[in-house]
Structure formats: C-alpha cells, structure tokens
Image (cartoon, rainbow, N blue to C red):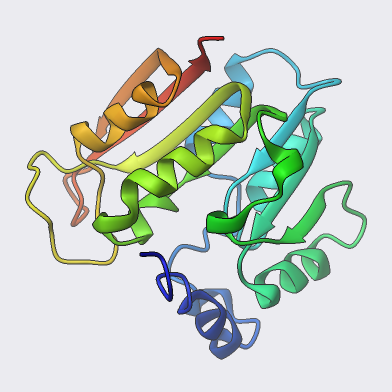
Length: 202
C-alpha cells in the first residue's frame, strides 16, 4: 500500500519558502558521491540520465554539465519550480512525477539513473516496490548512494537506512554490482554509508 507515503514532501518544500536550510536534505551543491564518480568515469556525451527525486536540482545540473541528456523528477511541484528558478538556463528536463506511477515510456530508457537518499526516506514496507520502480527505468547503469543499517530491524525514522537484504532486491530485479564503496562517518547519526554502481544484465 503506497497511498500517502510521499504526501509530506510538498508541504515541507512549501513551508521552506525558498529557504534551503529548511529542507533537511538540500546540500545546495552536487552530491560528493556523484561528483567523485563523474570525475572517474567516461563523459556522458550522447547518453541519457535520470535523477530520482531531484529536489533542488544540483545533481541533475552536474550530470548535464558532464554531457548527459538529463531528465530529473520530483513529486513536489514546489521543488521543481524552485530548481528551475535556481538554474534558469538549464538544459535539464525537470518534471513533476510520482515514483509510484512513473511514465511507461521511461521503462529501461536511461543509460544512467542516479538515486540518492530517496529510498531511505520512504517506509520500509514499500521498499521492495520503490526499488523495483527505480530499476525499471534503468537501461544500462544505476548509481545508488544511501545510508546503510547493519541490522534487519526497523530503525526509528525517517530516514530509514537500507539493509543488505533491501540492497539485494536491486540484483534480484535484474542488475548486477559493478563496484561498491563503503564509507563510515563517525560524526553522523548514521555511520555506515554505501555507494553502489549496478549494470543491467540483459
């Protein structure tokens, strides 16, 4: 059952009144994991990319700068308007969309899909569906960054860091791990983090 699990995002962006300090996940810069990956990997020239729950647009803009033809979506209309205001000359195709009801023509459409902290912001009982919906958009590669929990027990949240069994759903859905990097941040409430690059099997 997915009714209502994403309803709180739009009110949060509205209450922020264009103050990014009121949006807990707004980094106001490219996600470091993505920035490092882009420096180490081939140009995106001629390739397509999708940013899941793009927020205020920094990651989408970084991918566009790397040469990708970028589509970026968020369920929040306010977030999408805000992103367009921040980047008025953008080449990114920003769209309002619901992860649980994505466009059919996005099925296996994107050469690279970037997901950062979206899954962990949603309840554990919708995890499998969320992961499968994201995987469905992947033609070639998925780059996933998230907090990681070491126990299968449900933590207090949100956010709810992913478990190893939840990460395994990605592979069960048709992708394989190309590389994985684990990180630790002792100064954070969520010490364990992971960046995984997946590739579609067929």
